[in-house]
Image 1 (cartoon, rainbow, N blue to C red):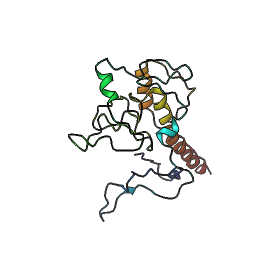
Image 2: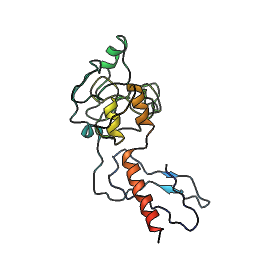
Image 3: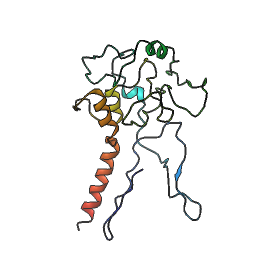
Image 4: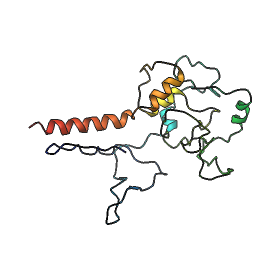
Length: 205
């Protein structure tokens, strides 16, 4: 949720136009309620020039690193995990069903609302990137790769947030992930920045 505020007499930035479509699971939702019962704002489903980019399309050129324990992918240095699995956990993760066909991998669950240890569908975009990657968290969304027996890598997080592959992030792998998760998506930041500049320039005259 982004709030755009302008001082009295100054031009308020307009909301950026939609560029990419929603994926199929997205539902119509509103935020808050006015005194007449209508929402303050709601999700737009206007036609868009581009289709959304799925997670598998975004990472199609990356190498299969299996469980990520090799720890080095020469062509893509950031294609590494932020944490490792011990010898007990790795065999368990290999038993998780693949989500390549978009099947629900969470049918056999104690609670239907939990997302813990679920695989991301390759047909969906990446979920929200948070500062801590915890595939076992029930609320942060699917944290496991749809086919490989591992969570997401730093490079996959960078691409989800709009970072360029060649952009250098300092620190450990965990520090890099925290920087990615603490950033506003580059796609949205650029669109909002251009609209803010447009409003500022338009108010100069």
